[in-house]
Length: 139
Image 1 (tube, rainbow, N blue to C red):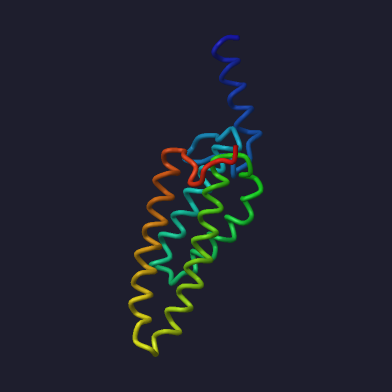
Image 2 (image 1 turned 30 degrees about the vertical axis):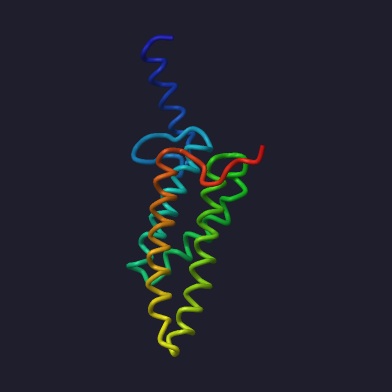
């Protein structure tokens, strides 16, 4: 195959790819690459929750639930589970914190929740960058 045929084949592959298959001007070829990008987006949505009042976290957890089945058997399944557990844990602790505001300790609970959320987002994102699972795989 000469360079022109290779170039034409590359163009044909790019034309076959959907719009969702192109990120930063490059074609993402396999499912794991797509899942990795999606997990980065979800972590970014969780981090943005500080600016959106939690709305972006709701969007992120919906995406995590939708993509969890696609991620089964990959490193990214543990990230989807981590993100889902982070959402539910923060929701319940946040509700308890607001309920305890009348008793005067709610603010402390909410501050600790903020620290816990930052920890979960940072740890998860760092593991994602290293392509490491957050939970041990069952043997």
